[in-house]
Amino acid sequence: MKQYLIIGATTALVFLSSCGGKKDTATVLAEKKAQLEKLKADEKTLQTEILAMDTSAANAQKAKLVTVQTIQAGDFNHYIKLQGHVDAENISFITPRGGPGQVKALYVKQGDIVKKGQLLLKLDDAVTRQNYAAAQQNLETIKTQLSYAQNILQRQENLWKQNIGTEVQVLTDKNNVATLQEQLKSAQENAKTVLEQVNTSSVTSDVDGVADLVTVKVGEMFGAAGSGVIKIVNNAALKITTVIPQNYLANVSKGSAVIVSIPDVNKTFNTSVSFVSASIDPATNGFVAEAKLPADASLKPNQVAEVKIKDYSSTGAIIVPVETLQNDLTGKFIMVAVKENGRLVARKRVVTIGKFDDDSLEIKSGLQAGDILITQGFQGLYDGQLITTS
Image 1 (cartoon, rainbow, N blue to C red):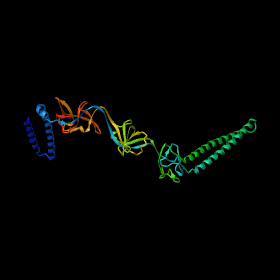
Image 2: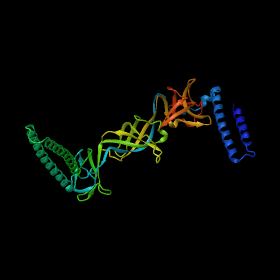
Image 3: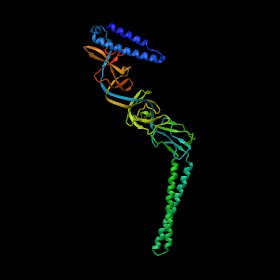
Image 4: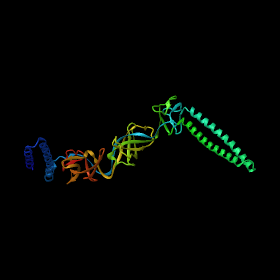
């Protein structure tokens, strides 16, 4: 048997030394590496055959210590790992409805909690109040004129019923009343409009929240370009926003599971995608996805977040540690422990892999539930090598 091995090794050396010729060095080197790998594979095969035929050699062989675990089918999930940031559903930059104006009074400071409709500041309303007073005076004048015209018409109609006066006088008085009634309606609408202009000087919050930014001061203009601002943030309704590469467009949809981790506060939240943008941003070559977050005092808009979006799931999958996967000239394989003739030996299983996530690898074919996976000590094992777990 030893003679057989020596002849094989000698033949291999002669074969290796005969290579070369006029081929370039890189080609010759590649061929020699391939030949060496083949010789190693042949050596392992011969060792296996010898062990099967020569029981004394098997008994003399020292078993290699390994660690094993039984493979069980389970659920496999794959996640897209991205970076995102916390955002608020309701962020309002306050602006005056009636246009820019000079601040006469300020009723809020940075950090204050405000309610929707709460008065934040008062703008100069001297001119609009004068206009409103004039509109009210005009309204009262028309009301007086209408009352007088209606009284005249009533008297004229009573006289006409007694055949006193003329019908033309009655019709003229009716026309005067109708005209004044239309003027009254117009004056009332004008007074409402002017009053609304007066009310626009009172600037209120349109959301509940916190005055996150207040840079305006009394006496300054508010609402003009470059002027101070008031920013109200509602932290009760938060969301996570992230940009996803467009190649994942078919894998992410509304309802996809999301795991959000906020490193700054050491908190993790399980949520789901609530919004997916309908277009690709040409600047990022990606699309925006959002997921709602629960109310939490430790969360603030613009906090950095680690986002994991589930894009693949498989039930009853065969899952192994990523590091147990090996490669050789025949492809990808994994070593398992098999009981043969009362001995525990290592066996090579060629596998087809699926997706991997962190340190877990999905095996599509080549392994099954119940197989004994070698998790430690698999490096350097050959097919049929004697192993032990203790």
